[in-house]
Image: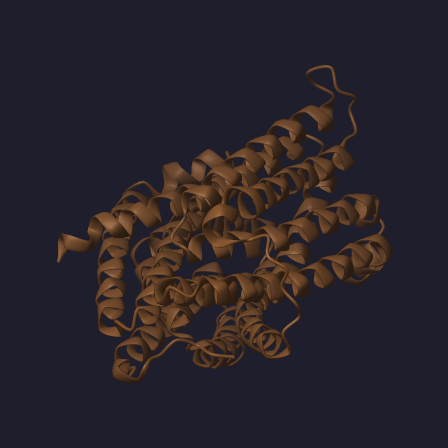
Length: 445
């Protein structure tokens, strides 16, 4: 059973580091910006929600490139893989321009819509949100390139690029926000430009690796014409995976709005617990990406049952890591919460929520890993349907009932959250093993 662990860890660990760095840099940026006051924190929080939901819609392009290139790499048909990547880059470039224009002309309206009658304070962050949109325009291009790199089994390049861009982001957030190291102080606007710099440098790194370093091996500087059938495939797959991601992000947005009704203590405890939950989510996401790579490549090699075996081994390794994380979180829940806040009410409630999530997050691991395996097979339709149905017709109503009808407070909200994740995790696991693997083939346009 352990024969494949070395291969799995060689792919997964760089992804764990990459995703963990993204989480860590976000936490550090919030801590740095937090010294500007409550208004700045609120602006950053709203901007994060807007950007995350916008990113979720278009993230399907990168996910599609990831599994399609993995299949082409396994089949030894990288000419098709390069063609599909170019088509995805054409589509993403158009999307990036639209995102840039949305940031330039709609940021104020978005803040007014979210803030309602109390939007005056948020409008101070209009320029910050504009710059975050500009950064996102670079970020979605980065995600497509990272999908290609992971598809060919190169998880180290995304790790290195993520480390460089996020270290720059944190450094210049500190320098440009408060005027350290000889730089001028720009406040929250400076923090926004630090985000843009990090994403832009990451994009330059992707361009260098793809068009220069990988050209001798894969011919990445080829002239690729627009292929309507491949574009249709990319758009269809991206749409399904993007809606899947958006249904989750939108459900979490509604969940947070419900919890906010419980008061500042409940909302603060919820944010702390979600941050700690991210410690388990990042490894799960990394192992899910690994499952996509391994299954996709084996499908391309016409070895589907070997792909299923590798996905199972990936789930075993990922689950063992999540058990270790869960043990630490369960027994040190309150001390961990105290790192985030000195408020006894907040850290005591957050500690209870962390204990609830400590071992139930194993189902989040199953969800990410087996969903990654299903992406590798091209079974994106099921992921779209199950995500939409469980998110909007199970998770949101259950959270509403727990909070507003049964008055179970934050504990009830988190029971609803993990009821959703347990059902989602079990559903994708059952789907994975009930798949007729003898009929699984490479995805054609």
